[in-house]
Length: 433
Image (tube, rainbow, N blue to C red; front, side, top):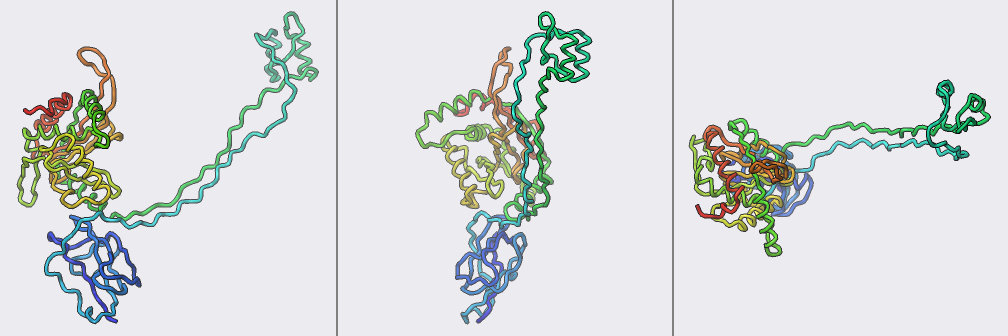
């Protein structure tokens, strides 16, 4: 039996360390060569690490969330091959990485307290007593009789009067008080059910690892390093909604349904040429602004692992339906964990939409090194004044953020205004200018 030491490999692109996302083996397990042992993550991608030999796992280095430097001991095997006596040689060239979505190890969840059953105390059923006729209409009685009845707790409507026209006399009230003519008891007030509520205790600790750690770090850096300038504009999308519904109704069965995003990106491809400073990156190492002629639109997408930004490349050269198909393709790839590194990098400006949860206004965080991001809020119908008359229109807000170091407020507002004009007159999106 020999020991084989496997070290953290060089994952390329200048990586000096990698984070352990999940172990798929444990000490004592027998593994086969090429069996996936672990998933690790760099700042660029998640990588599956296969076993280099067949053998039994003797020791593991670190747990989910721990950082291991390239060249450090990662896992030790016990093998039967004499060829494994030598330690793992350093690879001559970086390992070719196939990006994969990091699988976050399940964290222990604090046990919830046993719920206390809710017990409702219902009023007891009573046998019905003899019905007492209640005289309809106004009760006729003297003020003195009314006062005596009120003090005694007797409802005069339940006392039979012997006077003219059913008037309640003093003798009638005396008889009711003595019990000769018992007054029907008032209906008991409904008893409020007694409910016992359970208290909740305990906490749940979730280690920030993998994709969530990368997202947290990038959002922190973007917010700390970029002075955000926010601009919100109201857009009347009544005509756009009409066109969208018309095109969807005419589309062949199975075609991608049009949302607002393809229209927005198509319009953005038209206006971005006039505002190249909004379609740019800032290279911090070279202190250089890089303006792009092509529009590579990032589409912020919620996935089980967190927010990812797949890219629709060369949006300026795509038709409306082509944009819709590509948005759906890259978004589904991101959600399913099949997006490649190329599909998740290289955007020049990002579009983010909260869909039906879009609210009124949002303040999106710029996806560095980009210069701007445009957020789509919920479209709702509401009354507006149009041509001097109140009418119902479909209104949607665009919430945008720009890097105020390189994009002036005037330019940002002018670009969103130009975008608004195209969206409010959607036919102009497709007319060459």
